[in-house]
Image 1 (cartoon, one colour):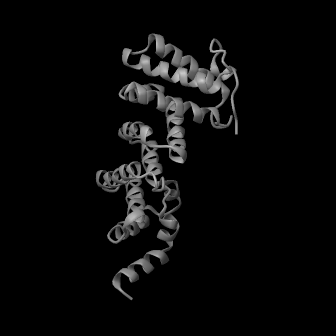
Image 2: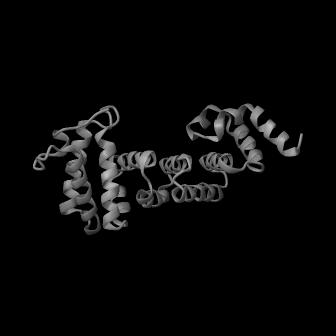
Length: 228
């Protein structure tokens, strides 16, 4: 057996790595079920030999553990940019960046906004769900990010957000939450910061296109709402 083959075999048989990196895919939510020190040690050792998708997954988990965060974040972002350049690749890197953003790295919001113009299909659905989550959890933050995007790209992002909200279950986003969002967007569009007004209008128009039956005088969420 060559040293590389031995290393690969050891990685597969490591009970931590075989579970955390099954099929070279990682989910940071799983980290809470394992001893942090043991996971850190195993991942640092694996980082010395991992390549390709596995290396990105390891970097993502180490970033989630706040281990050499800047370095590992950069590795994940590099894979993210490579994925945007090659739509035939899987969406793991997009999921990792979204996860790190959800875990508190708000600097990743802007790259995720900029990615909208380069994604279709399942990757667009992933981003749309991220936009929907962000606008319902931090409207001001969403509008701030959106305001830095060219107007034609603002419309695409707003449409992706609205499409995701339109199929969200009642458990995910209630009609009351959508009504409150619509009202807040109305206020931002008329009374908000100047740089946020145009972005808020884009969101309102997207919600009307996605959720209304053509009667735009009525709040979107009181009209037709599609559910899965």
